[in-house]
Length: 380
Image (cartoon, rainbow, N blue to C red):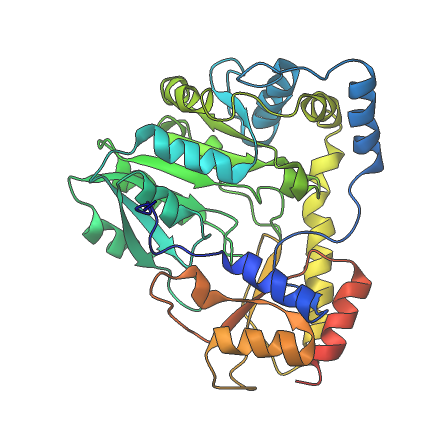
């Protein structure tokens, strides 16, 4: 039997490759973005309680209504945004699913989608499998800022969507108020849509406000905005998130969603509906993770790695030009095998494999994990 691949140029993700290499060599895994510390025992108990209370059957396709209601309240509290929980929020099995579903909802063959590189690895395959064309724009190195003049030059009659990610994976860059004004000017009086990946919404540092599309009614009207409970509550294995959009776009989103996932894990939704009402559960996350970033940075200051700025996410990128002139993929493999620390080469987040000799570290780890890793990195 012969099968013609829908994604002939796509292989195993770099995250799987580096995690497997880390396991093979018993390396400290600072590559893949997952915490190695426990999630909230209280939230776990609330999931168990929901199961005991009988919340074990299908949730509504749109999601458990009390959870959508508390998310709408959260949007008002954080962003002053009036969101209808009935027509504008859908619970999804993770943020990546929400991204795929949003793209599949609106893209047609030949549509163009502006994507900023380096970018999370699901974006471009998700675009291509829908027959659309990714229009790739490199972020300005080393700050990883958007060149809005280049965006303007790449707008065509076929431009269907602009994809954003803030805080940004892999670099930790965040959008500014000026970025928002540039975006507004570009999309005004057009039919261009926005997909905003905001899964690290609460992991933003240094007193910088999160520039969510939820803050701006004119942008939200044309946006799909995706979020992740896994990133929010240190439970990436739950694969649970949500998407917010305008009523018209969400109606179409649900047409795709209902025949793919249909509904998500009910007990977790019930537990989250109660847990989210304790606002400290998410308001304290930024300072908690910033402390980890700063602790890791202090440890790394005793190595020959050079830090690039990170204002959000689980990640900080480091240059290694004082150590080696080899390519970042080769360096990352050697670092795993010889130094016992796994990272991710940032060239893997570019379609062209552009190599600035930068690797990405995940600092969402226990202090002892970070200590062990840096002790080994100091020898490099």
